[in-house]
Image (cartoon, rainbow, N blue to C red; front, side, top):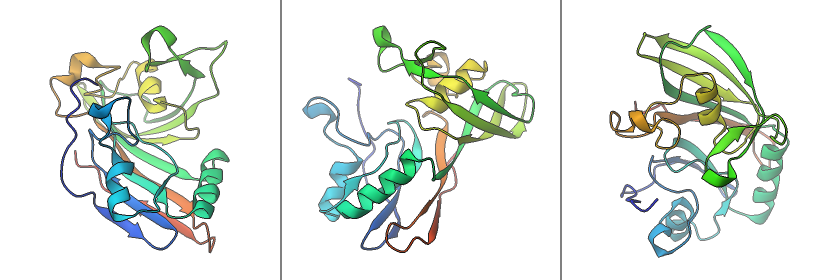
Amino acid sequence: MSDYTPPQGEIPVIFEDSHVLAVDKPAGLLSVPGKGAALADCMIARLTRAFPTVRLVHRLDRDTSGVMVFALSEHAQRHLGQQFEARKTKKTYVARVAGRLEPKTGTVDLPLTVDWPNRPRQMVCHETGKPSVTDWKVLNASDAESRVRLFPLTGRSHQLRVHMLALGHPILGDPLYAAETAGDHPRMMLHAEELRLSHPESGVGLKFRVAAPF
């Protein structure tokens, strides 16, 4: 992350009330600060300026764009956090991956754990890995690449990136797991397209959606 040069400009707000804030996170911006002053610029720091009570609920990888939800009160943070932990949220991503992914639909069920000597990389490990499940659906494909919709049923670190790599179809532009493609793409081709959850006060279902910019 020594070359961390996050995008500038305002963070687009998708939804806001007294409890919930939903935004469109740009690719290249950390969700939370990293170690050291050079990695201080991040989503939570920028949002705090406009929303002093903002609280973290979940994270997106630095190079992933799309829907990200924050709480605006302690109660909302606790309630939303419980929804993520209990897998009551529904997340949908769009990705461009290398090669023709077949069949058109399927499931990756491979346990994941941190690759300690190569942190922050994650890896498949059937001995110590935590259960990790991703459904996929191919939207269109050529021999060179496939556009897919991904549905993570668990929320492990780098889950979609490692699962696609394990299938032999890494996400294009991924600097960690497909570095050989990074020079051919302006960013990692992974976008959090939609997030569904329940409002922490009313219990009403909420759906936030932002079309992929690629």
